[in-house]
Amino acid sequence: MTRKPHRDDVHRMIARTDLLLALPAVAAVHARPGDAAARALVQAVRRRARAGESAPGRVQSALMAAVSSRSPSPLRPVADASNGPRDTS
Image (tube, rainbow, N blue to C red; front, side, top):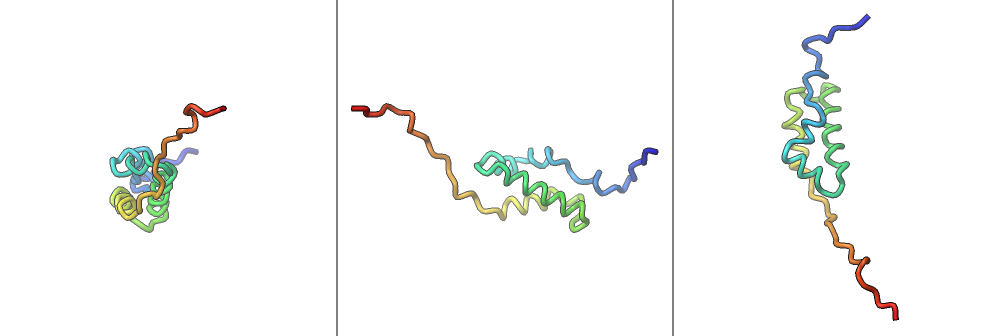
């Protein structure tokens, strides 16, 4: 027997992960080293909404707050010059 989803089903009201990852502020975090950090933020915010700790309609604003409070990664891209000419004499 298939169950009809209830129109007040909280899970249906929470924004999808791919939509949240596409938000400009989240995409900026997603593009930096530590790509998993953005996905982890999205998953944590969605998990809190599913658990009833925050309203489903506030997922995006909660995510924006989490992104803005996150300090930038101390890592920075570094050029790898190891493939340059070598002195073999």
